[in-house]
Length: 220
Ligand SMILES: C[S@@+](CC[C@H](N)C(=O)[O-])C[C@H]1O[C@@H](n2cnc3c(N)ncnc32)[C@H](O)[C@@H]1O
Picture (cartoon, helix red, strand yellow):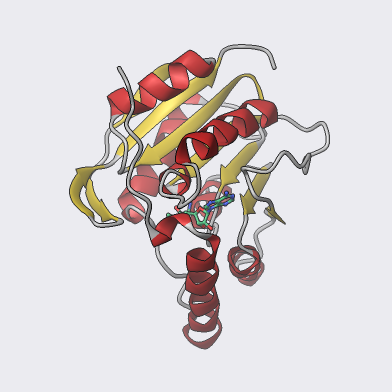
């Protein structure tokens, strides 16, 4: 199956996210509002529930790619997960996520990182689980060469995941079939599908949200 590139959108630009998180920081400081929960609370609960049932080791390292306000990691922390890292290319997102974690006295490591860069931010650390809720979607909307952006994303994820590590992608712009057609030839095996509701993102309304679990099956 061939995968056709999406139309670019402002949601694929760093400027958009910097502005969005600047606003969310203000709201957090003034009203304690943590900001947008992408794809809703239920989606985060379903991902957490799946992990709880399928990964018994709560000391396993988890990274959230494009973590935004970090609320997915907060949920995992509440459920007893210990080794949690969030990355985002927006400094403002990281500031917001750190502020929220501090206010709740939760220990999560946060770092600014552009996933598409080849910068080695984690030294030799490899993660057992990588989460992505809406970030591959945003990257796929870039005004730059989107095929190249998606390829860079895949190489970065392969570089930071342990062999047999899990990548859990939640997307409303790509179907299950399209995600499989992209990730399976690149050294991932689809191991599960997490049921998800309907959502609206970047102009495409009524899309079904897909949460799919891939396993990293080849050594880097
Ligand atoms: C739709 S939001 C989702 C945020 C968060 N995952 C959530 O579920 O609330 C997409 C996120 O991806 C981040 N992002 C987009 N491209 C990125 C890149 N190349 N590197 C790191 N983060 C990126 C944005 O800053 C934004 O926080």
